[in-house]
Image 1 (cartoon, rainbow, N blue to C red):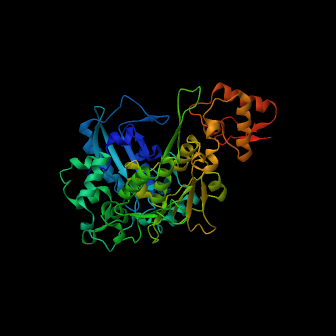
Image 2: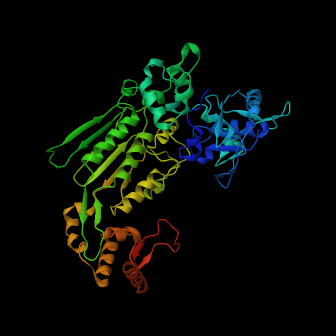
Image 3: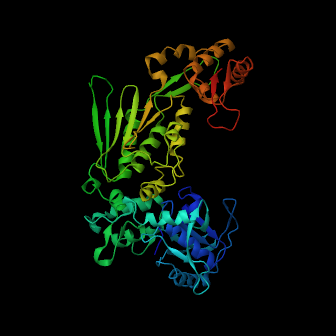
Length: 497
């Protein structure tokens, strides 16, 4: 059976988090079985992981040259692995595939999160009657589960994510072959070369977008969301609704609905925003060769926030993702709100990191299509893009019940009447005294980083020597200071004294 990702993409592209890949230089049943059971337990709902036998890594990097496995031993290793996996309780069988990489043979083992978790593994698999215990993944290591971990694993048996559940109202023919084929082509999957690649049933099994016994083989919800032309048939309002209100009176208001597979919705709505909403102003600065280019909104930031809304929304709740575009802001809303493991302070400081994902399988597909970031990096990426454009920071809103999540992105100041008052100032060469006045004026409104302040004043690139000199002189005269003494603090901003 083929694995739905090629070895080249697994090892060379940042699609699968490194913590979800384990390397073993040689076949060792005791170590391999513990790793397989830990991936199957999938404590953090990451979607399991991959075991690569025949290679090793040091300090998070693949060691070259690859050691590899003797081709004559591959079949024997797979048979032995099958025998050992029967020692797991309950039995769990991963998918295996011999692959050639950089001239060497490797055994790629795919261990998706198991439906029957938690799984117990013999403490010494090669010894008969060994005590069976639980193993889990913590960061990039396989360890024995603590008592708290075990309780959490048992609780997870009652909480299979919605996107990973069988949909009893659907049939296999609801998964459309052209959509599956387009996806496999996009991610460069080896499944396209499979002899059974023309069979929807076989591809569905390989992609794990269907499950159940032969007499009740049904699509999973994630399969219907990506590989059905009309997911709303199964999940009402699983669409994106956009309303563009250029005038507060409602004149010229435009409403659009983006339907279809959720990855297509995401691409279509972002194409609309890119072609119809994003605008740019260019200012020529006297004494400066490079013109200043400022966009009304950072496209990259909007893309991250809309992608996160599609990724993290609940498809059990019959509410669409909504995008409201007004004269001076864009508001993106999805339901429900963030997981309660994320505190209000985390939301306020844009430090939204969670151990669990609401839609782990949807995230896997979107990551492979490069439509979302992994490792909780989506919001930091968006914030950095907004700062780079010199735009005001967004507001992240939710309520006490975490029933919704809204992101309000203000338009760049130069696209407002107030902001245009400063355009003349921005387009002429400034003296040091003028620069100091503008720096103090900006800090009177809010704390801001040096780079962001430089961009806000209409400059691009790294801060100039003159600008840095102005900052140093204002600090030396105790008019401004940094909010933190730690120069490596990413939130270290300038402020008025």
